[in-house]
Length: 455
Image (cartoon, rainbow, N blue to C red):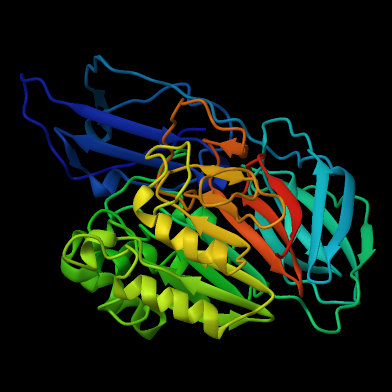
């Protein structure tokens, strides 16, 4: 058939005009638009059905006088949109494993689709609980102890087609009368608000997704929480929409970028009392049976020369705090790591911290600053392996900002290193032991896990 559209627009004779005609042929979703010399002609815009067959001819002219104009096209493109009405296949080989009383891990084999799978929906007990990208695994962080669950997964494609469900996978979580606290930690987190999110930068939202869901008792930030200067505005516009979602359970440590603002004012105003005395930036607290200590490794900001040195107020406070809290298990954390083969290497200025913690029988130290993950075997203050009384150090500068590779030869005490995965370190704090697991952002494959005993 023929579709005619009439407008009152006229053109001058004997001069060239620029005419743009755009026709989208899609049955009842069709649309035709016309521009003359760069200006849209609304009366020639229509959504009348053009069927589904290709447009064979377009005539432009004056139908009242039965004449047409000569039209010469110098830019012509034709695209045929593929109509995708076929749904993906069902995912296969779904497994559900209760890895703790509060967690179930799922994995499945990818579905297939004629055009391409764009994501998966996860259902638990006939209720959808997650909508994912193309990753083929999921951690259910909202599982409850001693509860049976049945899971199914189905795939989606770019046209909105939803495939059939996978076969069911069922599991039952274990009994937890008194749940052991679970904490998560990372540093070097949020880009400045103007930072562009890519696969290798500004992943603070992806890492913060690992923290939400109610499975954590506390979140520790290991400094450089907000780049580049740590202003309050930057915290509110970058950190807060991401890691700020768990603000109420966060116990932070300050990094050098926080002090890009005088006296780290933005950091202390954002976190408030949770960050400790703004003149100090160090504090301690208990979780379960463990004693946790947040220290300020910005040594030059706390004293005329070295606010971390033996005999300075922070060091004296640390010694007294350790004496006042003879817990079986002790964990300390700050920004600049004592030992590291990453970007900045180890920082000697914090050695007095390690001396005091070692003398008190502390167990775990966490740090950031180097933008990578690294785990060390238990060590004494000299960095020598000490399996009996040593402190285990984890460097977790993987909160989202970016990665930096350093190629120096690691010492024998450096057990695991990774320079290309964002994520958080989870620690389960038991009565006299602890479990650790590095959890990557969605789609990441690197992980590291194990257990240790308290000194």
